[in-house]
Amino acid sequence: MKLYEFQGKELFARCGISVPKRRLVRSFEDLETLDAPLVLKSQVLSGGRGKAGGVVVCDDNASLVQEGKRLIGSSLKGERVLALLAEEKVDILQEYYLSFVIDGELKKPLIIASAAGGMEIEKVAEEEPEKILKLSFDPLAGPSDYHFRRIADFLSLRNELKDLRKVLRAMYALFNQYDASLIEINPLVKTSAGLIALDSKINLDDDAEFRQKEIFQEFQEQQNVIQQNNAKAKDEGTITYVPLDGNIGMISDGAGTGMLSLDLIRDFGGEAADFCEMGGLTSPDVMYQAMETVFNRATKELKSLLVILIGGFNRMDEMAEGIIRYKNDHGLSVPLFVRLCGTMETEGKKMMIDSGLPVFDDLEEAVEKAVMAAEGE
Ligand code: GDP
Ligand code: MN
Image 1 (tube, rainbow, N blue to C red):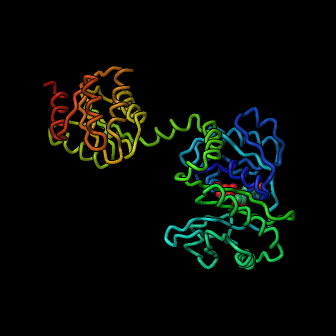
Image 2: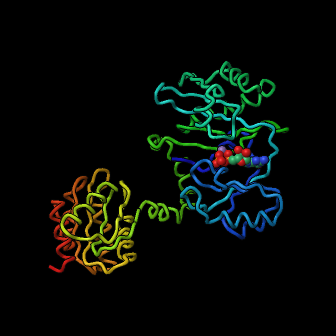
Image 3: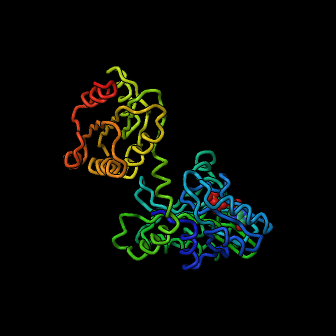
């Protein structure tokens, strides 16, 4: 589970890492109650928000309201922004990078440190690897004072060793206590008041949920509130739809399958009305939305609908669920030709047949029938 910045900072605060004073803002009304200067930070799970315009320093109340209204509800890196973190503005002397990660290759936990903070660490690692220090430590013993001093020297933070040690110890405590796979501070900033974590990125290991129930539940509940509308936005984002000139609607669960289906339609003498693919692993909701999209956006009257599914990751019972739900809600104005195979094929087919919908095993047969139907034969 990835945590939002505001959630990570809550954990930082609980274990003694300094973070700016902050408030979560979710509505336009909340914005009116804030006082500049403040930094408004979009709460999304992807990184690089600063570069994408999702982090804004506001020096007066007018710009605070204006920027806040622009950010709330906007889309940032494919995620809907439904909450902002309004933070006290901090005067930065220097930015650093610190993280605790599990290194899959070394099969060991690592501390990564760099004085090139605030930037994408992957880029620094590629272009200036000498600016990054990686220290592995014994997972049972945890990092020792030797590690802390090495890091302080590398970052030229010898004078701040006490402060830095406190931050690193707290990061390790979180890493260890909550089964985290990543605890990252980028940037950790030097200020006249000491070291402050300006950002937070925390990933909890999903495989450890069974023994971390409390924290997973606490954070999941908060995420549900923020993501109310996001699930739908995300699902819709996975559908690729391109209208074409023909009269045979086409839906596939992958781009390759979709291209193959278009070729076959052509081979059998038909014309596809669209290219619509659901992008690999998908859900009943997306299947339903794909049907909605194909019916609502077709430029010519549809004569048949061809659905070609190859259940690699996809579950055919779930695809059948989406198709059947669409049929029950809207009815079907044209004959439907579904070919499904793969994961949970038997269950999916049974559901289709029980709902009075034909299914095909053979790809070419399904395409041929769809073309014949479109020709009115
Ligand atoms: P990210 O781009 O998603 O990693 O978001 P960050 O939280 O790291 O913010 C991006 C950048 O905004 C930081 O590296 C800082 O340079 C800047 N920034 C964030 N908060 C403050 C602040 O309180 N004061 C100042 N001066 N800059 C800030
Ligand atoms: Mn950052």
